[in-house]
Length: 136
Length: 179
Image (cartoon, rainbow over all chains, first blue to last red; front, side):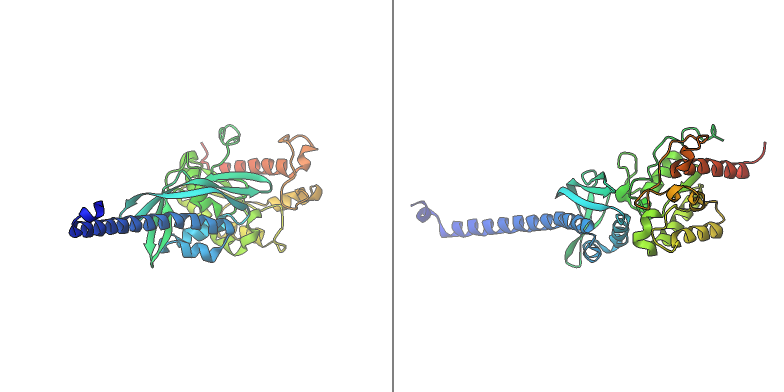
């Protein structure tokens, strides 16, 4: 059998390499997923008007802006439409995230759509968690 | 005066949208991304593009949900406008959804404190049918801008627009140097 024809040392190196590669992929996947999820969670908390949750999902520098955004929605009902985010790059300590989807604000029956796809979101790991830190 | 402000009457402000309150004009979430710079909030975007001399600030009806934030945000609006070289013209609102007239009282006090014009719209709509309000007690009754039409002038909409022109004329004459 083929397996018996391999040198045990070769098998050890292949196994170690596979484990290392798997570890790297897992780490990348985990980090990316969490940075993107942070933005999705941020908007989920925003439309739920969950102030405590929203503040916990914002980095320290963005917290005041997050609460302003929440306050700005006080007179409308808001829903989240098909949000899906992904990591698109890195800039210093920030992961850059792009999203598709929209916020739909309803005021007295009149709907206004705020696209989430035309911004690049800045996400940073702070206190062990990924947090939304603004957008451009 | 009508001629002097041609171009301002028909355009839709980038800092005015349905459901806006005094916080919304500072939230870049609401900015028109096609016209705004990155991180620019709606009021800054409007002032940069339109470069107005005067700005009517008609807010308050949607601030009953966060009364505690209203004065702080109005101060920010007034101070930002003045910094940008824009004379803010405040207006009381027709409704009293908060029940005790607190928002209009705040607007009157801020007008005095900053020495800026105030259009007392609340007073103007008191003689109108239902005080110029629709059944929901918030939205204005509508009528065409036919200022010589007695019927149209029974609507809060037309009264607001005529009064706005009148106060704009007054303010403009008072701050424009005589030739």
